[in-house]
Amino acid sequence: MTTSAESHLQPSWRFLFRHPAHLLAFGFGSGLFPRAPGTMGTLVAFPLFWLLSPHLADMEFLAVLACLFTFGVWVCDKTGRALGAADHGGIVWDEIVAFMLVLLFTPEGWAWSLFAFALFRFFDIVKPPPIRHFDENLHGGLGVMFDDILAAGYTLLCMALVKSVVL
Image (cartoon, rainbow, N blue to C red):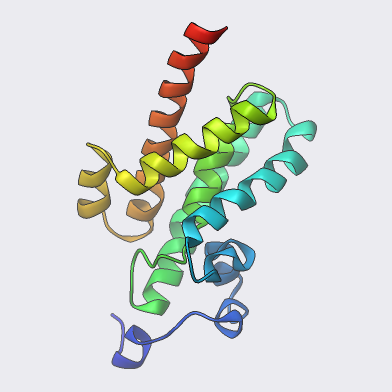
């Protein structure tokens, strides 16, 4: 249960450094951007992917993502409770993990990466069914994380369709 003081807490660098979960939930600070924090958080996935992917086989990378997703449920829940807003706009760990999943299956090349980024942001913002349903009805950290995984799934499906036509 949040107190009145917690429900009015505004995120800041000071807040992020109060607990490591907050720093992660806010994508190492990218979620503090005043405009489009989800887009900024999605961008953080690129360097993390480039850092991790050369060292892991695809199945190992998927296992790491599963761990990051599971950990993200706790991180996002803890941070949302501290802010008094379960899915605060600055919480971007969900975008980071989901977009790293997209990048794992994205063909090489900047055009494919840009296309993947645009598609993912589209689905994350528009939230077509059933994404919106889960966004509105699944609460806590799992709700925060799950709708972005669905957006990643839509992105990958669209990319597979385009790839089958283009290549």
